Amino acid sequence: MNAPPTAGPLLLRAEHLGRKAGDKILIDDANFELKKGEVLAVAGPSGSGKTSLLRLLNRLDEPTSGTVFVEGIDYRDIKPGNLRRKLGLVTQRPYLFPGTVAENLRFGPSQRGEVLAQDVIEQLLTQVGLAGFAGRDVANLSGGEAQRVSVARTLANSPVVLLLDEPTSALDEAAKRDVETAIQIVVRNHGLTCVMVTHDLAQAIRVAQRALLLESGRIVREGSVNEVLHA
Amino acid sequence: MLSLFFHTQLQLGLAQATIAALAAMIVVLLARRRNIHLEGEAIIAMLRGLVQIIAVGSILVILLRGPRWTSGLLLTAMIVAAGATSAKRARNIPGAFRVSTWSIALGAGLVIAVMTALGVIDTAITSLVPVGSMLIANAMNTNGLALNRFRSDVVAHAGEIEAALALGAEGRTSVSPYVLASFEASLIPAIDSLRSLGIVWIPGLMAGMLLSGARPVYAAIYQFVVLAMIFAASGLTSLTSTLLIRNKVFSPAEQLLLRP
Image (cartoon, rainbow over all chains, first blue to last red; front, side):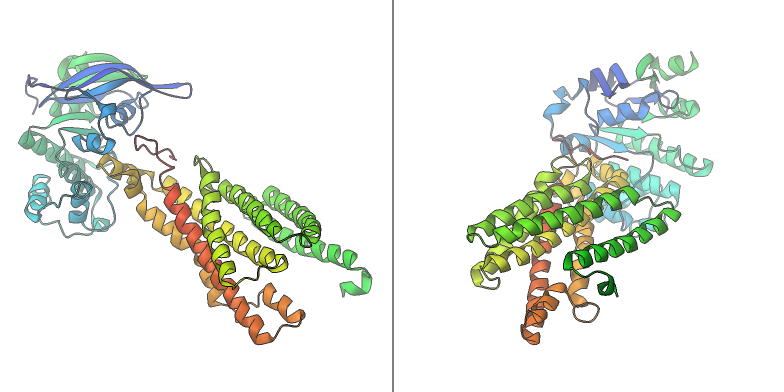
């Protein structure tokens, strides 16, 4: 997985991106780029602003300064629903909707009037190691299974960038390995561009090619994953 | 028993009010033992309610002798006051007062207007104002319940709502389960009132009509009429307010404004 950076076209550029909440600076003047096919790890101690950065990229929070360009377009000019489909977010906790696994996967496409075919649902579930789970009630899933459904649900929207917010942090070791493997498979199979927030440096090294290190909301280091995390 | 000690109606009324307030305070003290602190809110609400009802009662004595258009003025003022009161149940939701006032105006106002036009409510100010105020008060309570439930559901389910937003859903879609739940929950008192009418309780209006010499059957039927109107006014108010409030918890860029 830890291949040299792909020199694909520029997909995403954060320019002077920042957010303040009252007097507290959550993200301070973040500047970075993401090329197609890259996996970028965002690391840093607790409270350093990793999740805040991801929420800004998905525009779940509004920047108080700067902006993000997605495929060259200022993301404030993109309809929020379309932007969030393109920059698919997998949250720390899965937050599945009541119902079956298949209903969860159909949710995103149905928001733009599309019906996700049964074979596509099966394909997505197979990729995350949950073949045959389509009809299962989400209430009966384990933590690791629920997180993998959450990954598949985001992929059902065909995002151009996958934003992963510590997707394995709330799981035990076995479930963590399953989810990480599922993520590696889907990133490789889809050639997905990915931003992955993690506090697990070993995981960052296994999954990503480039890394950002955040401290108190500021990017203090950026470069290849080995340079940044071993410095 | 009280009438043995208090000989004028005013003295008797004050004594009755004191005993009723003491009963309410016992409940407040029982709640306090379970670490539920209602003291401040309950005392202020009771004092405020007592002062308001005496003041309004005094004004009504004058206004009820006035021209018929006065009833429109009184009911409008009641709707605005009801909007302000129930909006407090939607703390931190921008525009809650406007949503509440418009919803009560549409819900209770429309039912009052239609029922008055059809002759179900008498146009005499002595009839229109008391019946109208019952519809407005119940619409206010329903609206408060709906907004309170909606607010707490949104805060409790912020994760699910943001998960839906992150999948490209519009704000109103992401909160639709909570809009529905708030609407249903807000109508429970109105439904239960209709369901238990005559069995669990005989409402004040019917008792008043009987005391003033109306035929018992007509008094009973008219009580049903009032409760059905209350249900209609409350339902329309809750439907309107839950539909209007759902967009108020999002920014123009579909970001959830209410978070834990």
